[in-house]
Image (cartoon, rainbow, N blue to C red; front, side):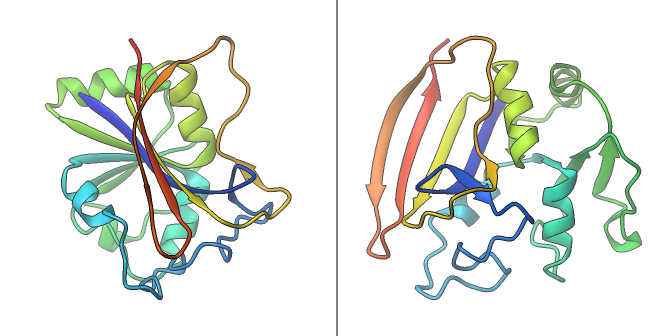
Length: 180
């Protein structure tokens, strides 16, 4: 199973402010980016058959009003009890387990492409060397603090640079693949 991250980060490496806000990211409020560009997100999402997100990411996405993942299976990785709206209960579930255990379960269920999102969730999958592909959009803004994309590691994890694309609005997309 392919395991991917597709995420935006500030130049100083944060994926959200300390309060969880994404006001620095155009289009993060669920509205279309002012440029009309989706930066390949819908094509990427179409390639994914299951998602794992953290609780804070779930809380943020649910606040947008319209659920952006349609009927995609979404697992919210959390150690706390959460309320999943009844309209999402057929595709969204909460779990509390180790990333390796979850990936094995998803492989056994026949899933082919997992999208991992959320700061602590991404970090926990990286620590286990489960992320095979990283797509990071650098947004040309410094916010000085917040939720970091990367955290402490027990040992180095090496990636191969695949490609970098720059956009007219200043975003820079870089893709990396895990070196086994």
